[in-house]
Image (cartoon, rainbow, N blue to C red; front, side, top):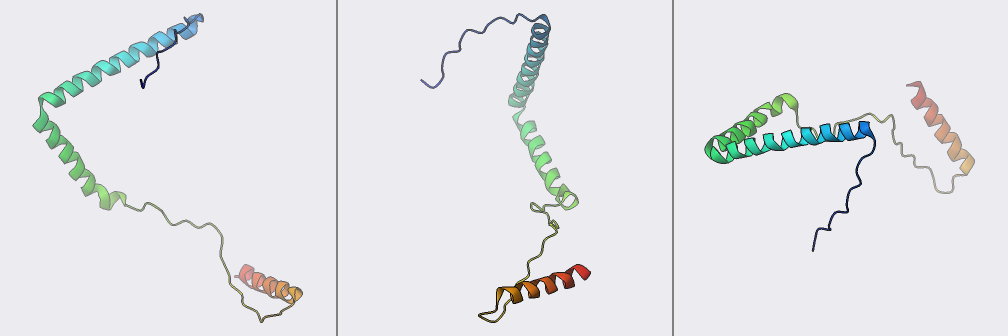
Length: 109
């Protein structure tokens, strides 16, 4: 069995919450009725429904040049990578000095 039985819901004692619950219930009922009417119309007018769907699809394809299709836009993250290759056995102090000189050159530009 896939669905569990619902537990008994406790009645809402707060008057304001009860009114909000009733309003939401009416709104969902009217949305359900609207959906039923649209679905019945679509099933009764299948050719028209398919033509409308095809028209929307073609229209969206025609809008592609205007909207664009870039899924991953280029962004400037304010980072850059610099690769430095020094001689084998270079002391750490020299490496730090070279890196600081390169940082200063980049900061000036």
